[in-house]
Image 1 (tube, one colour):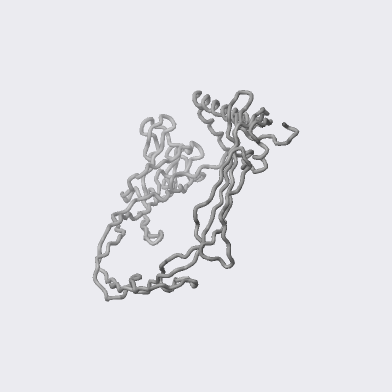
Image 2 (tube, rainbow, N blue to C red):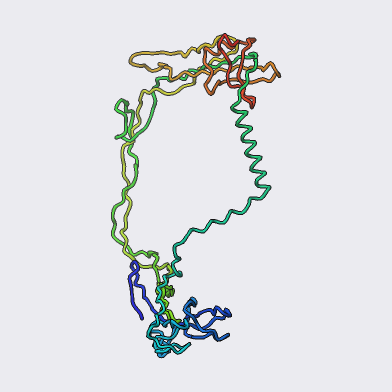
Length: 382
């Protein structure tokens, strides 16, 4: 039986075939043709509990007589001897009893991929395989080291320190008001600029349509190269045969091909514009001024500011001020030295720096890892 159904944009042909199944003898475990009423190996009668099976890609039945038997209907079960007999048989092939009270075997629909499992209590999951001992030990060591580092990092201890050096730096960034010579296209010249000269220059190109030409174009096309026969479910006919449905799914490959197409041609024409040279007064960055020191009180360098309103050429203004402080300390318990630029992740301030004079001693807080975190500047803590 053939048919067609749509799958996306492709038409898929559907084929139905009747194939021979098999059953396994529960007495001797021999494999028998589905239509056989008795085991070929031990002669045991095929009972009602025997299940039919179907091999993948089992050959289709083409003999007309066998097809007629397959389509006659499911076997029936004798209530006296539990034997199963063909639908065409009026008497039990096992004990000869009349069919009157016989019951038909079930016709079962089996989806593609096999029978749908029956719902039941969930099976306990198998325990995962044990981890190797070496892996467990390695993980334990890493975890222990992490805990130790975390503990030491969080742990804080007081220590006595002495200031042994001071360093400071102050920088002023500056700008100067100057006359600059610049160039720009005439529509981009600043309004305050003083034009000096201009020159006609090529600014770019524009593309002008210039007819059509034949060009070779490469493209990809899907080409059908055959079909895959894919099972789409089956029906257990209850008599040792199965009705199997197949989808004939087209197979394709992509091929590179060429074709001649008309394509628009263009020619380039230059675009000219006026390039203007001009003077303009602007603030520009100049060299900063800096002062450095040690024990002396930090001071700001002279920025040399020259300020007019409105600004004049040669005027100098401040842009930004930056300062940095550092003290060098010695831990009295072991003589270890540290450079301190921050406390608790905050830069040293001018007021803090002025308190931390060379030769003074202070209480400081150290982490368990030996990092200096804070100097107690409260006079009560000295």
